Image (cartoon, rainbow, N blue to C red; front, side):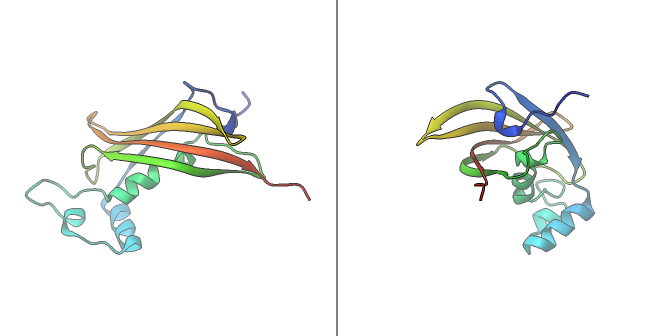
Length: 144
């Protein structure tokens, strides 16, 4: 079995394992309960079409920690340094969504290494839903 690559050691061009998921009506309702947002666009069909997945859920699922290949050893943590999110189209409840991640930059600033990843979500019909660029810096717990 190949050794897992630590997320903080990925290089420009590396891709993380994608994630597919379906936002069922029940999943969507649970999320809406959690964020206390029950706008009709999220719960029933409107003149614009079927119910829409809450954008905060999409943002949550575009975090790289959702990738099946995400791995950091004990004592290492990632800290978000920057984030840009663009919502392209609404995601519809009941559709299969696919999230993919790719490392697009690495740089050093003030003695720390930063990793920049692009995330993208598309639905089962190939419609682009979200684009997100996140910069992370990794820190290790200091030994006592």
